[in-house]
Amino acid sequence: MNYQLPILLYHRIINTHSKIGKHKLYVHDKDFRMQMQFLKDHGYETITFKDIDTVTPEKKVILTFDDGYEDNYTILFPILKEFGFTCVIYLVTKHTRNEWAIKEGEPELHMLSKERIREMSDYGIEFGGHTRTHIDLKNCKKEKLVDEIAGCKKDVEEITGKSCISFAYPFGAHNEETLQAVRDAGYKYGISTIFGPANWKEDPMRIRRIEVRPSTSVSSFKRKVSGHYYEKNIYKLFSGK
Image 1: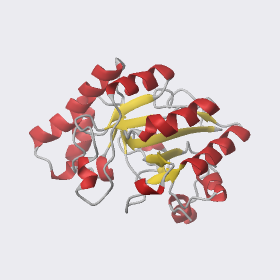
Image 2 (image 1 turned 180 degrees about the vertical axis):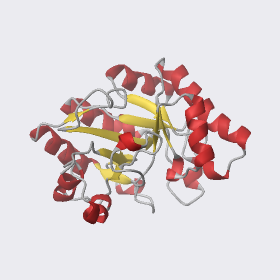
Image 3 (image 1 turned 90 degrees about the horizontal axis):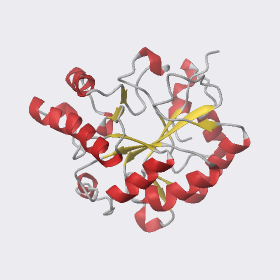
């Protein structure tokens, strides 16, 4: 039985039904707090990618949040501080609202301001790259690819004053050219969605995450953070059931 480091995938933490959106990329604050309480009660420690290669995986978990929504500050951040936890947030650096999602019928949402990013960074939250404009990288010409990936790294480092070491592919979309562009930009880790090897060390440019959904129950959350990988139960690990 192999123990794998659970890396969880979130987007938004919400406290109102008006911000739900059709893609359901959220978790209610009360459910998220229960999940954090479970981690605390069972002795889990949250780490970030700067720690990933220097700690044993037992009782460790990485919480990741894509896009960098304002609710990551107003709702998520106070809960993390309450439990003494941290996380990794992947920033879209050239939008002040979710332009890519509005086009698909999602509610208009504001993104984190530079001031709030710096405050969260000073607390210990790690920030990574998620492109400048949340574009599908598989359909980019090389010049645009470099700007979106390397340019995003530059933006994040200018805001936080810290090294930006990981990059999350928008929509989880990537190909060999994308992976090489991430390497060339100087990122140590490339972060996928639910696809990739069970053990992140097998391919640091395609690190798999386990999605947490609005329907994720406490028992399902327990399975997701258990760290045990079963080939026959891969659907259960990735589903919100």
